[in-house]
Each structure stands twice: as structure tokens, then as C-alpha cells.
Image (cartoon, rainbow, N blue to C red; front, side, top):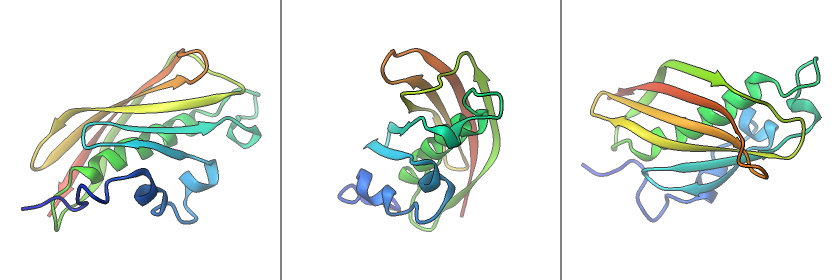
Length: 141
């Protein structure tokens, strides 16, 4: 059985093409690196990423991390498979009000029926850790 996304297509441009008019596109998320073991996504923090209190909205961070984890899952699916998220969790440590943030994924478990991915979200300019994110994906056949 081969991967759903062949090696010669596993590139940032392929995943950018999947955004369409979706939430990741609206937020300005950019796919920087794509491998079966790690994805890196970034976004520039702008006004519409903020909560009413003036700090970055937690949903911005979760969307960045969840998109990275979802793409990581997609990169490891076999032909005929899909997936759905069955659990996600975030721990927040800090915030930023400007600059660029990055999510970097790492596989915890890539199995036949489930995948578990961690994403670390950090400020690009300082390397300051903003959040840790973990999600579990149910692989559908």
C-alpha cells in the first residue's frame, strides 16, 4: 500500500493549495516545511488574531497547531484512508502581541488506526515557547 500523498507531491505548495477559503487561509497561515516526520507552519501576528483583551486569541494558536498536526496526519495516510480528530489539548505558557509564530510537529504515535501528534508553538524572533499542543487522530478506512 502506498501513501495517499506521494513523496514527489509532499511539498509546501501542495498543502497551500488545500487551504482554499478555509480558516487557515483567512488567518494567513503559511506552510514552511513538509516531511512525513515534521511540519512547520507559521503566521504573522496581526490585529484579527487578537482577543478583545488585546492579547493573542487562544484560537489562533490552536488553529495553527491543529492545522500543522492535521497536515502531518495527512502526510502519513495510506491510499483510501482519511482521518478525524478525536481529542486535542493545549497548554499555554506565554503570548505575543506582534511578530511571527511557528508550530513544529513531532510524531508521538503513527499507527494503523490512530495517530498522535505534538506541536510546539513558539515566537519565531525570540524562540519563546508559547504553547504545547497534542492531538489524537482516528484513521478512517
